[in-house]
Image (cartoon, rainbow, N blue to C red; front, side, top):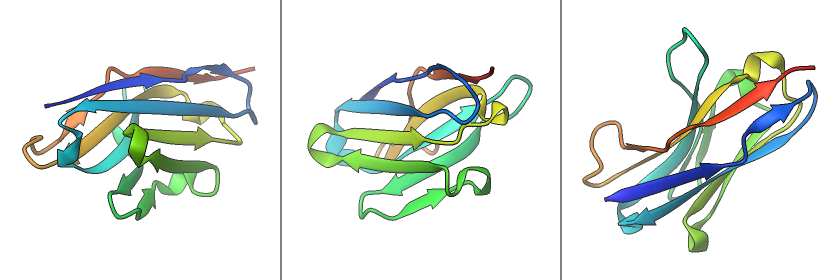
Length: 118
């Protein structure tokens, strides 16, 4: 199995920046993609960004040009650099990994709160 530990959430003013980190441990050799989702109160959990093992990245339209996903393969870590944050980015952010034997929806982290407010 794979375990995930997230960090980096917090309170930031509009226009500010935050960087989220997610460290994977366990059977990391099974991972084929790593990504971030977010869920605001009353909303469904939506994909924010994803990076494949080959390096291909995908972003939600709402964050293109502002967020950047990256990974450090040696550290089994995925990052989400969030710039020009807006109040509508406020949500719980979840790390997600997918791969062989990890189930249809993959493995989820515990979530980290990001609040954008003045």
